[in-house]
Length: 374
Image (cartoon, rainbow, N blue to C red; front, side, top):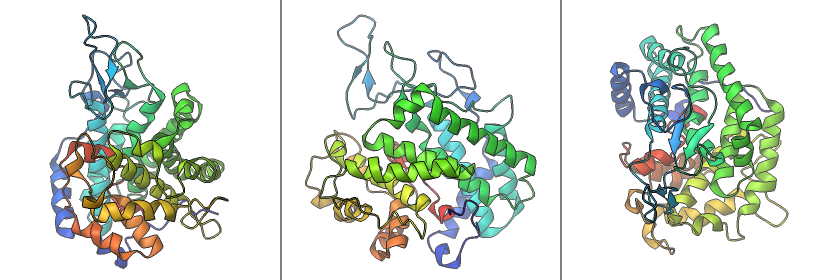
């Protein structure tokens, strides 16, 4: 049985993974920042309410063959800076504030950190005037084509950190039972949208990094809401759908075929690793699981690890954008390094800059506080 509510104290052996000076500095900044709300920005092209998350596909551009630029056309890997991303940035700011303050609360004590984090959570998820509705009906819209798509479900990968922060804050004075239940109710409703909506079902049935990110999120949300049956479903999907996408050499061909093969390969592995971290049990260890034809997490890690530790030997085409921004502090370096005893991954993680400034890297990192997951 998976222990749904773990001990959220920071174990001494994990403290070395956190720079206390950097954490304290960031937490102090977040104490004084404005609380982010989904209602702070809006886009006139959204058909939803001010409480509905809205985004537009990154790689879609005006059509040069038409006077009004519609319908937009796809240029894979090339991000259109004019497409609306305000809600994604707001959601990410909320995650950053909450997870950092929760980690500071666990590391340093101090109810001031917890009070601010809980206030941010309450306003973002519960307060009727500022909350985000628990759906992604209007995510990854394309001008002239659709007002939302299934692949928009990937826009909330940053929510994966939030339930761990909530659990870490549970012992604080600020996290009342009413607020805690309000948060679990929101995530239960969002999980319901994930499982039953047209967009959610469409995303569940995709391939490549999208279905990996779908089941990573579903695993986090079901774990937080005590949905044991869905956790078992996610574990089975890992074995029967996610690993089989792999080639025998450990690569994922659908990612290598993209115009950003390095970034997407690392992105998929990062989220696949989070699934192993979430769903492995002593009785069913996904870190060591192999399919009948020998595909396994370790094979995927063995394929990519040399290129993460030394990008100069990458034998495939360079990414069309942001290639120089990577590698960064992927959570898989910590999770896999700890679970599989690969100290070189942990050492490499600690050697990388704590501050990440590249927008593509920030957009693709689902987990920023891996210690709270451990």
